[in-house]
Amino acid sequence: MRTEGEEAVFEAVINWVRYDPSRKPALARVLSAVRLPLISQEFLLDRAYQEPLIQESPACIAMLCSVYHHILKKEVTPGIAASWIRPRQPVPLSQLIMLVGGQAPKAISCVDTFDPDSQRWSSRDLVYAIGGFNGSARIRSVEIYDPRRDLWLTGPSMEVRRSTAGVAVLDGSIVAAGGFDGSTGLCSAELLDPRQGQWMALPSMSTRRSSVGVAAVNGVVYAVGGYDGQSRVCLNSVEMYDSRANRWRAVEPMLEVRSGAGVAIYKDHVIAAGGHNGPLVQSSVEMLGENGWTFLPEMSVCRRNAGIVVANGFVFALGGDDGACNLSSMECLEIDGADQRWNTLQARFVL
Image (cartoon, rainbow, N blue to C red; front, side):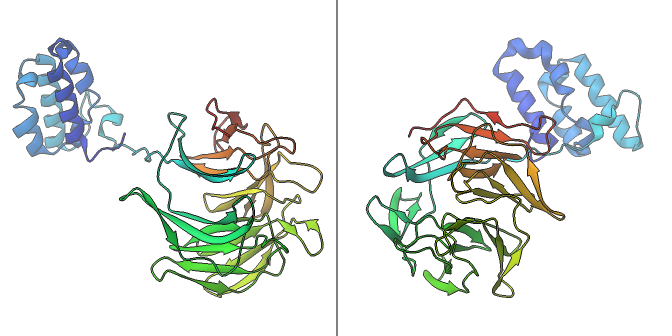
């Protein structure tokens, strides 16, 4: 439960009973779920005790008297359970997953939002759509959705055409790294500060990386795997851009070669899922921790170019392709949960 305090919970209980008088017999039982010992003494006397519904219930009066006695003595008294005096642990607000564009099988422009709690898709807001492939050419244009006016605006174009690039948010700025410009793979990177509205070049990576996975955490950007168009090999190497030092450096390579992997951050750790190693599309997943890369449970299906998102404590894998066809399925993994396996969601999105 998320609440500003137990006073708000008390008011919710009173409003619930007041809405339907037939609920009065349940008042004492429901009121016991309010952590009354955490309510201020003034509220208890001036509001709770004076509430007409409370005055009609001897059980509720007895409950408030017990609580008031506890508050005055400032020690645990009979009838006061430990859980009753323990502050609530707020439940984080639900996060939404946004799906932007893609290829199914032609380039598409729709934007959809997925609510993991209700497992429903809807059309919602978007901030930036950067580069990509419009069905005929690689592009460097940027579009920005303004939810207040419900329209798309033209943003500042990148310096280079990029499809299959990796994009991440770094301390309020946007970094685009690698990709393919239509003729060659790219090792360049650039950064957009939305306040200035202009892209600026960053130092180049040591390796050309198209179909690269990119994620940012704690002031650094990770470029994970990809395809080196110069040597024509899929990569397991990883580079890290340190914004403070303004340079890229190599970090420990992945356990498997991955091009077109989905990359996300889970509790400050990089996760790389799926992708392909050339001939084979992968279902394996690995995470970079303090002691290097370790494998996580495999996804239920092979996926490359899938969206990998962390929301509400779960890692979600959305869509992609399995080497034969595009996928509309989704699955999720609770890394810290007891059930260490990916669960396929019933909800699907329209290709």
